[in-house]
Image: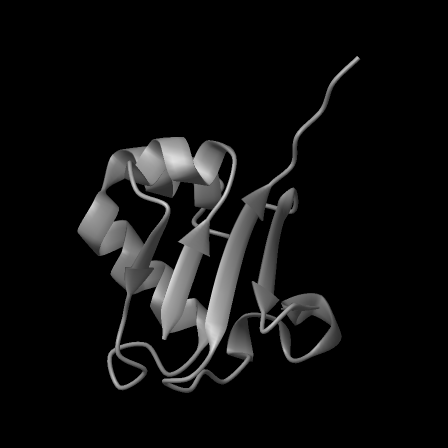
Length: 92
């Protein structure tokens, strides 16, 4: 599957996107673990709270749909999917 990073996530990973096989990450929860393992502390700090929960200000889209309207972190993934990680951006 294609995993895309935007805003602060892009800065934390140093890349725009990566390819991850769905057999390594069959759902969002596992994908987050795989990505944190690959990109380390900078990405972990952007994605997770101190207690290891996914931060509320992170939007994750699978094929353009927010996972909150699918199955949350249990959303199933397939090789043809595009997963996008967006961090909240504020301005003023």
